[in-house]
Amino acid sequence: MIFADLQTMGHALFLSLVAGTPLLMAAACCTPMKKTVVHFLPLAAVPALAVALTAPVGLVAEIGWFFMGGRMGLDEIGRIFLCLSGFIWFLASFSSRSMLKNNQNQTHYLFFFLTSMCGNFGLILARGLLGYYLFFALMSFAAYGLIIQNGTEKARKAGRIYLILVMIGEVALFTALIILVHSTGSLAIDDIAGVIHQPLVFALLFIGFGVKIGALPLHGWMVPAYQAAPIPAAAVLAGAMVNAGILGWLRFLPPGLTSYPQGGVFFIAAGALAAVYGVITGLYHKQAGAVLGCSSISQMGLITVIFGLGLVDHEAGLHATPVLILYVVHHSLTKSSLFFGYDLAASRGRILSHLQVAAILLPALALAGLPLTGGAIAKSAFKQLTVTLGEPWYGLSTFFLPITAMGTTMLMLHFICLLRDTEKRGNSERAGSGIIFTVSFIATAITLWLWPAAGFFVSNSLSWTKFWQALWPVAGGCLLFLAWRRFFIREKQTLDDVKKQTIFDIVLFRFGNLLQEKEWQTQQQGRFISYLSGFVPQLRRSEKIMGRWKVVGLSYLLLCLCMLFLLLRL
Image (cartoon, rainbow, N blue to C red; front, side):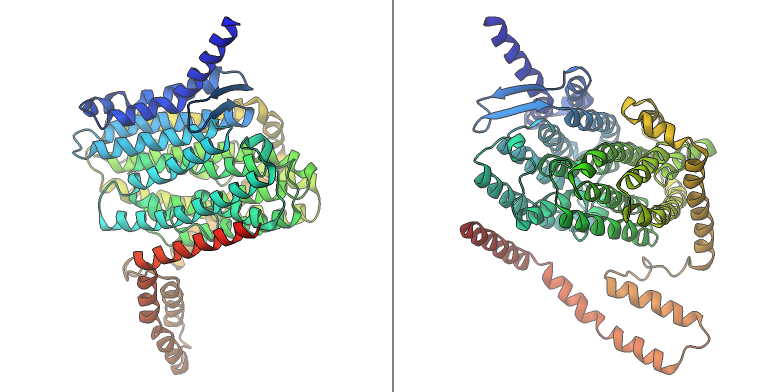
């Protein structure tokens, strides 16, 4: 009996240290010990890695004193997400420590960095609804402090956009969870998983977690936030925290337990649009962080498509879940590696060598599915999923996957070109940036090849047919990028130069350029452009009005009242 009690206490302590260590270190930032926290920053992620690598699957601990009773545990999916997040936070901690050397505002960054880490780790282990929501909200709102760290007007604007969407997502998620608790009478996530009685709950869960992954039309925060946040913070935003949305869907809409064909089609359509939208918008950005943000929108769109395929029926869900997790691991490692490569270029005092550029190019093209990379394995798994599900999904994938691969190739080559420009403006070199990138590069290159769960997809990707299917879209994307650079890029006339801000400006700008390049431009077309231009000032004024805090606050209040009305109608 005593041994059992000690074992239970040991498990509770072991799991509590995962989120407790960064939380205690964040609290230390508010004490005279704050100057020493930065030196031990990487230790905050060590308990998470230790639990992910050593704790047995199925480990559960009841923590009665925590937030009205807490329950934490580790399942197979949680282990993968915890190991992945812990590794990225660990590398970002070293990068942050190097960045904060001689920084006067390091306490602000450390507090929000550690608080976000606590929330990220806690929501992965949480098995009770209240604890899950607490950690999810903690991570979401703490990330705001990372986005506004630089204190510029651009950073504050990005923070406002992020905060507005986060509040919308939190209200939607909270409402959905209340409805689920009312339906099941339980606060355990395992009891709630897969219980979807009405489209309203499905829509609320899509909004609540869709904000986190940048799903259309909830993507507006992602690009500004990736630009504004310090690069180590952007790396964890893109590689670790964004996965909270995917994990939320897996927890509450688990494929295999949830069968909702109409919802699955909605996920597929929204994901496909995001995959294309991210590429198109990314090609017109002139900042490397923004391009990576657009890439995340596109890649999260592909993951959303896979999740939607898993909702078509129960059998499809069983096949889709391993493919989904494989894609999440591939994207997280690759995207964080690209951010650390970006950090290497931005922080050096000299130009990157050809070998370093090639090393950054490899994970970039892996996102597009370059043969013999993790991307080829992930694309092969996606293709195999559609083969298993049959028509119409297989037929649609035969042109959708190559198109997105070509678009991603163009986007990543655009990123590399911007990176070469970034390195010319780099500051003095930060210690360890090369080592951090090297470690992330190695993890990206070998993880899927050595992961036993990916064994079938690895062997499948090595067949000649799969090799060719992975190669030609990347080669085609390279040719399209060269053509795009030759015929559509103008050094002295870009969207950034004329400070375009709205979608209406973008349409006018591109349409106006097209007319100027054609000799057959007529007077009537000129009048039409002038007519459209007359609406731009009005649209800009409307956009500013909608961005005022009074309007946002009133909209938020109305949204809360609507949610309350819906709850009263249940």
